[in-house]
Amino acid sequence: MRVLVCSTPLLGHFNPLLPLSWALRAEGHEVLVATDEGFASKVLERGLPVAPLSPVALRDVMARDRAGRPVPHTAEADRVWRSGHGWGRLGARHLAETVTLARRWRPDLIVTDPVEFAGPLAAAHLGIPRIEHGWGIRPNHEFALAAEEELEPELHAYGLAGLPRPARVLDTCSPSLQHPGTVGDPMRYIPVTGPAELPGWLDEPRKLPLVCLTFGSVLPSLAPDRMRGLITRLTHTLPALGVEVVVAIDPAGTRGMPPALPGVLSVGWQPVDHLMPRCAVLVHYGSSGMTMAATTAGVPQVVLTVPIADAPDNARRIEAAGLGIALPALDLDADRVEEACRALLTDPSWRARAAEVAAEQADRPTAAEVATGLTAAYG
Image (tube, rainbow, N blue to C red; front, side, top):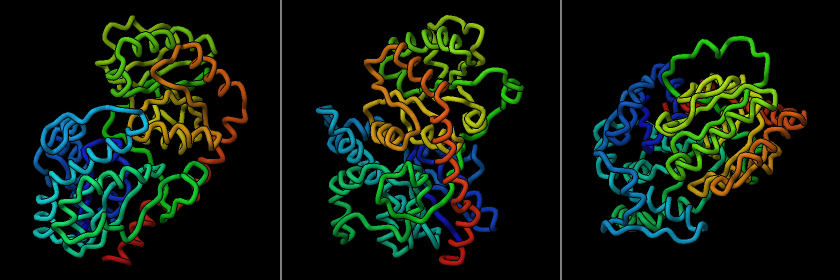
């Protein structure tokens, strides 16, 4: 069987597709990833072949319309609609190449992430079955509505009344965390961050609970001075709670910070999929990958909510599921983060609830089991 995986060029979108892709390869199937040329090296690092599509600057398709005019920021409420149009524009840019690739390579099945829109149109146009592979909490349905509006010319050209529905949706989220009423075929979520050299301290016996602060490159780029100040304060004060601290952040965001104090194990990029099961609390900004990594490991969460993409929706689901505490990110002081961490560390009910939801994941079919089912259906 040949499987074409169509992914948007972000690790948070692509990494969740890896366990199934690897499982299909292990069963002897051919798997090819179609994605932006600028992202191709990330695919190759993760052991999959890639068909690079013409490079598109993600920042440009998100910030500018098809005529090159800036897309204005208005109310916070339009963040999903604005992003959905951007993903639609990216799909439009890659559509012709994706159709040409699929026609030439002739896949038996196409797998797409939830906001990749060239693959769905190519699959419908060529009559190829398609599966939408979730990355955790299902994105707001308005992403797809906005993309459908953006893609109206392409849909019309292909004789489609709207975005085509997938043959199946793979749901990788624990039921307690997922939006109520979400329908999909269950699959276990496996956190993957990619190639990593594991630090020696990672498997040393811990005398104190471990708190991970991870802000990637998003928060530091939005408010660099404030985030450096917040991280500096937290690395000075959190150890007083009787914990050790690891800061997983883009090294560029640490410029100007003072040296780490005793009680801070490491600052910089971390192998989060290996680190998370060793943590007592995760402090993060609401990305899907970190939300699911902590949920799968049974780790309570403090979410510094950023008003972009699906982060606010993830924060609301985390609180609703009893898995953590959400705080607004951009008008935040360190005292509130410390208070939230103290609550999660001292009240055992948080850890117990996180363990319950993690157990829901353990009961879901593995990627290997899902791959076997797909072979029976489409192979």
